[in-house]
Structures are given as C-alpha cells and as structure tokens.
Length: 73
Image: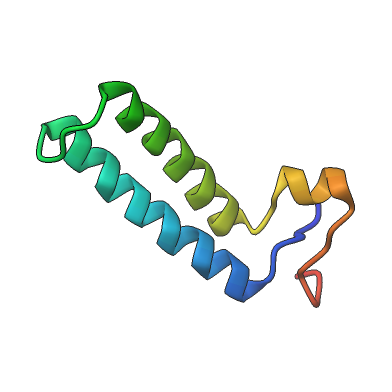
C-alpha cells in the first residue's frame, strides 16, 4: 500500500496521538474523573493516530481516494 499522508499531516497525527495517549493515561490513573470506557476509547484513538502518522498510511484516505503525499517515497 502506498503512502497517502503528507509529512505535515503525519506529524500532526503523531502529536495528537501522543496527546490523546497522555489524556488516556490520566483518565486511567484516576487523575481525571470521566468514565473508564473513555480511557479505552482515547487509548484506541491514540494508537490509530500514532500508527497512521508513523506509517504515513490512512485507510480512510485510501477508501475515499485521497492522496495527501506529494511524492511517493
């Protein structure tokens, strides 16, 4: 599968993923009081964003025919 996420988009995804992972950790440890299921959802969203940013591949972009990568590397 070819890359379809640009470099800036990838950095943003990884940054947001790390932020969500930190938020999920705070929820899981009880620092923030929201339902525990929220920590699981935040954690899953964080993992997806980090993987998409690191690999520069997005399945939703592929399904929609979007290519934000200027050069296939």
